[in-house]
Length: 83
Image (cartoon, rainbow, N blue to C red):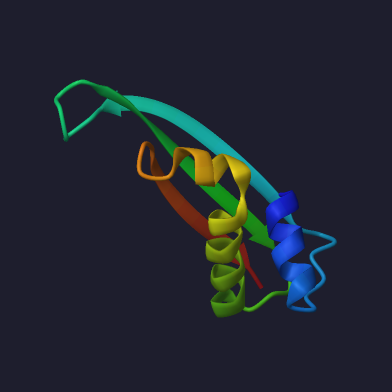
């Protein structure tokens, strides 16, 4: 959530009422037939139009230390709830 707030602040967007939830799962890894992790990240940003909300989430995903550490290793799905 800190990465999202940082990105929003740099764009002049107030995310006071925002929330981020994360769900982690385990399933088959198509690349090697073994098991792998999946992560679903949902960002709730009331009052922010959907296009801007999606842009902020994608930028935050590139900035977030967790996302940077796991990029390419874990399948991540980003979802935005806004307006």
